[in-house]
Amino acid sequence: EPEVTQTPSHQVTQMGQEVILRCVPISNHLYFYWYRQILGQKVEFLVSFYNNEISEKSEIFDDQFSVERPDGSNFTLKIRSTKLEDSAMYFCASSEALPSQRNNEQFFGPGTRLTVL
Amino acid sequence: KQEVTQIPAALSVPEGENLVLNCSFTDSAIYNLQWFRQDPGKGLTSLLLIQSSQREQTSGRLNASLDKSSGRSTLYIAASQPGDSATYLCALGSSNTGKLIFGQGTTLQVKP
Image (cartoon, rainbow over all chains, first blue to last red; front, top):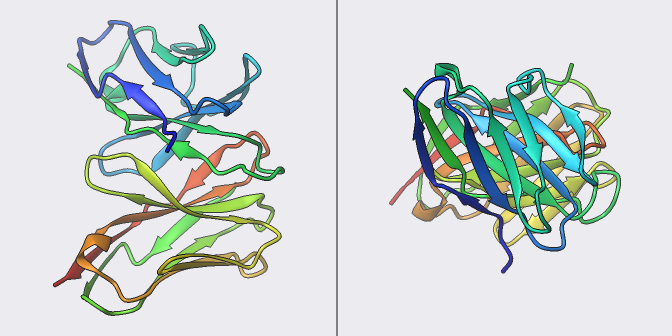
C-alpha cells in the first residue's frame, strides 16, 4: 500500500542552524502539507502546497520557514535558523484532491522528531 | 475561528466494551472531518473520512457520525480490544486549501 515517507526520523541540531526535513508523498497525490506537534500539544497546521505554490500558511510559518518540491517526488521543509521552540515532531501529509472534491483523505508520514539544543 | 474539542481527554475501558469518543466544533461550515489514530511517538493513521454531505462512515468495528447542525462528530468503537489502545484525533477541514484543524485527542486504554 502506498505511504508517505519522511527522513530523517530524528534530527538534532544546534540553535541557529538550518535544517531540511524531507518527505516523499504518495506518488499520484497533488496536494502536500506540513504539520507539527509540540510534545503534549495539538497537531498544528503549518502550510499547504499545490502546483509549486503555497496555498495557505499559518501564523507559525514565518520567514524562517520555506517549502519546496525540488523534483517530482520530494517535498521539503526548511527552517533557516532554528530556535529552541522549533523542537517538535514534524509531519508531512499528502492528498489526491482538495476537500471540495472526492478522494481528499489526507495521509500522514511517520514524522521527523526535531530537537533543537 | 474554528475550535475543535475532544471529550474525554482520557478513557479506560475493559476489553469487549463498546465506546464512543466525542468531537465538537464551533463552526459548521466544514468541508470534511477526518478521524485519526496516533500511537505513542508515531505518526497519524487515517481511520475514517466523512464529507460534509455525509452523516456517517463505517470501517470494520469503527463508525463515525457527523452532525454539522449541532457541531458534533462521534467515533463509535465496537467490541474494543487491547490493540485499540491509542490516542484518537479528530480533524476538521474548514478550508478548501486542505488545512486540517485538530482536536487535542482522546487517549484510550483498553484493559485485557
